[in-house]
Image (tube, rainbow over all chains, first blue to last red):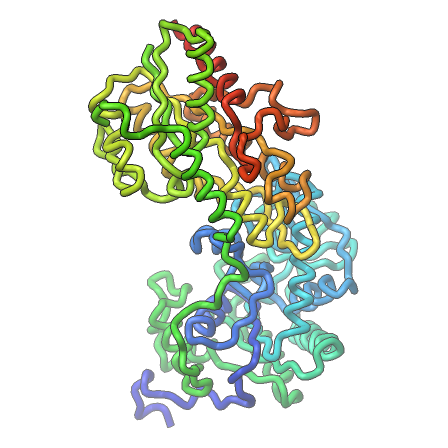
Length: 342
Length: 236
């Protein structure tokens, strides 16, 4: 019975299937997944980041370049098909024909077109960065002990040539829309289930012990490429995702589901956690979702310090150079000899 | 024309060069050049001054020992030459010791894009560029005086192959040169005769101290001062 309880007093949303303690956790998914990763990190869980920000790059700058947002720099992964293809690309099982999209004076990666604020300067640069990125993704899937994935969308844009799925419609953040080359596809529940099943099989081939925690984003669609009213399209999308995930969780004991979608959207929550645009989840909502999560996954004693950077730049060599600079100045100038008041 | 040159430790070579030219009677009497350092370049990426409108009040304790204000209140200057913006080594260190590479995959290094690299450079020079803007706004003609190029025996080349380090070094200079161009700041750049075909500094311009692999000597400084005098002559 929930009718006799205040919505915020409901604390039995979720019973965990497995523990996260002392396990390396990786996250991916649609925008809402960013909150999950950030909270896991801040609570001191063993958060895996195989493509970390370069040392000493300012945090806000790093995030604007896609560092530290997820466990590697793939940007938002909205669909199960996109996740499956990301995995296959990382392990060399799928090489899309589409290599780049033109944008302004440069090129973007069709599979993460907004990962940097500015396009890459050349195909060679894009290729080098993507090669490293995909190796980092492979490392992530090999090392993760828990993989958290938030499904966000069913609506997809894909290549008619090889079925490659793009996170955004070609032409929006690079490239040009061409109906001969690209197609819109709204995934069905069986599509999503099949993609997730295949992903789980292939993931376990390289990492047999990994646990998977699925969530569905509570953020409704902002727009739809279908002819339906956006609320109707959103209902379809979320229903499909929720049903597919439900079936997966029923048949896999090492896959868990955390109900972030329900905590925000359940009717008795009365839309309380949406912003005034009735779409974005407020920070109160995010906090409430994560509180429910942490009721089951108790954070460990948290030292309050982030993981140490890989290396400090202030090396002996640099210090020596600094000393040399001081010596150079002392040698070159007699600083007390001139009487000008500066 | 009264020119004040200030900045990092590379003002040392300029000072030696000016002295050599004065001794040889090769200075232009119409151009009064004074060189006074601000201090070590490692402080430049920090907020070393406060904008007080017509002046930069130097707030860093070390720098403040040498200047209280720029332009200095006790000295009238027409031009300030800054030996600050065109010395890439801090960011070169960040890449070399930080396990990074510039837009290319190298063993055991994480490649960063040219855009990320640009952020590193702008982060490194953000206060210097603010100083440039402040001085320009105060009616001072500002110019940038380059440090030397990369010497082939610089210690970072033991950690990363020379061509990769030079690529970073040059990319830094290109980013800052563009920023200076956008602000209409002239640059007294490294004379072509100082660089070999690959773009490294000739050893003849190396600092006399065998252990110092990144500062230049008075010969380089003299060439830079001559370039500065030539620039000054065109301003008359």
